[in-house]
Length: 112
Image 1 (cartoon, rainbow, N blue to C red):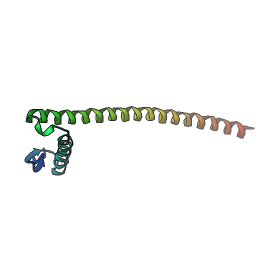
Image 2: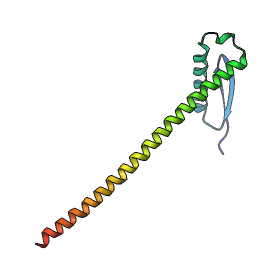
Image 3: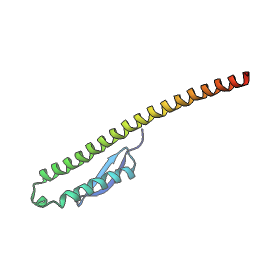
Image 4: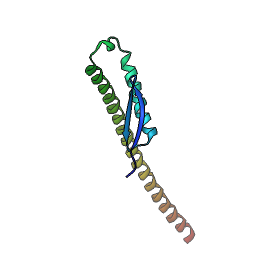
């Protein structure tokens, strides 16, 4: 098992220590994403007057929204890959069939 990494990051103006088995770069990217989302919702009118719990909930909802949209997009890509895989398989089958027909025609010509 790889060693745990600990990284100091700044999220919402607060220094936080993130610890995980992922690389420091990955942990920094996660923190950067979260900080960016925090910045986005902080710009909403009245956000600064909300209780901390509500702010945290809004941030969580925004992250979940991004997650479900990304998951849906990944599903669309996966379906597209499956369709293209089937098309490639069918095209390969057509090539094999055509090669067999060509060989049969060539044998018929050479027999004459």
